[in-house]
Image (spheres, rainbow, N blue to C red):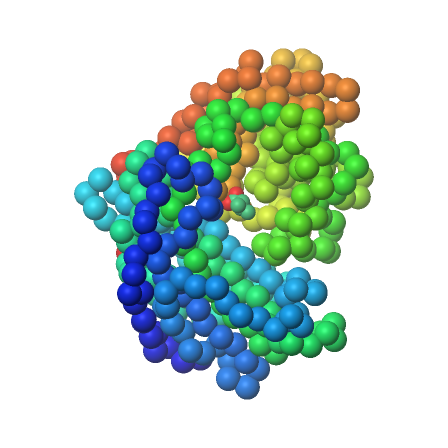
Length: 355
Ligand code: COI
């Protein structure tokens, strides 16, 4: 691996969008990071270059067999003008877990963190500072070898692109309506559900499309074997407050080990709120709704941070949660996590990393 990072600055700068136009992942900054891999050379030629299209052979393996992984994290601008990353080491650790599952060669995590800091520094004017905004960071790897044999690629490209963002869902922190998916599944034991790889997201689109046509924002995924146990919501992990205790599905190999999920569990424990990771069946959830003990529900992920669930539709049952309003605990978790991320709330866990 060669560590000499080359930087070529762009000669022109793009116009930056207004904070209220941002949405999610629509605009990209002036630069990107790129690095190549070849079996004989390992990871090499790391460079920051002007943001630009890439050229690939039509036979590149990524197009045919989906050998690719990605990550998502955010940078924040504090009111005293510092730049903070939230738990970036966790993302690069998970990237290597995903790499392992997809037979992609591992990358030096410390080197990646240094390269990311440099890229964010180069494009720091793009970090928005309005409330609810941040710079979304998308590291990803594609297999580039031009060959149609089904085998791990001999060549890859690792890239990082940056996008100033507002909220992920149009609803923002307002509760979303969710359809419990009982036909399609997202992942199965032994599959790729715990890896952040494109195929998981592609395979989820159909159910999302059907749910959206019926007026729901997302789907609640059940396990792929019994279609009984709750796994994830949309592309997020999921939490329920039932009778004063917070429950989230235990990591079982088909659920993504979310960094926001881990942070929420840590935060709840720190506050003394009972939190348990266990299997949670959809009929158990429905029973808790019927007997009035289902108090709150929310999804967690880097993009939306916390997304309260106001309504769940399962089979013929409609469950309105907390009268469709954002729950007290969901709001407290959202305010604290986003506060730690943007530097307005103390960080007792050492999660934020300054650029
Ligand atoms: C996240 O919640 O950060 C995600 O994984 C969603 C992303 C695929 C846009």
